[in-house]
Image 1 (spheres, rainbow, N blue to C red):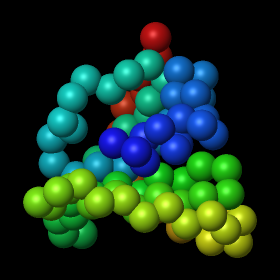
Image 2: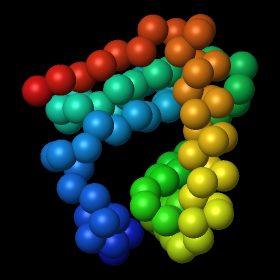
Image 3: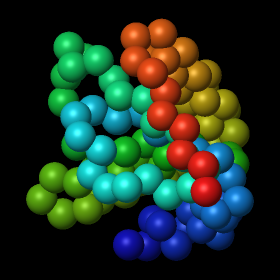
Length: 102
């Protein structure tokens, strides 16, 4: 999983609060400092992740084999952050946010 190594060069997941939008059942017990919000079912299914960190956006697909594309662009990372924030606010209006602490 090379993309995980790339991301860990930039962030330490043990030291940063992470917000995750997800559909269906969350696959595993979330680690500490994770906030979760379940997306509305009518939005449809998806089988991948979008990670936003520093000046990068990573698109990760999980169908058949794991595939990742990492785009290094401050402009695209800022755009993705705004879109994520809009989705987070809408989600948290419809579902309670689960906050995982230590």
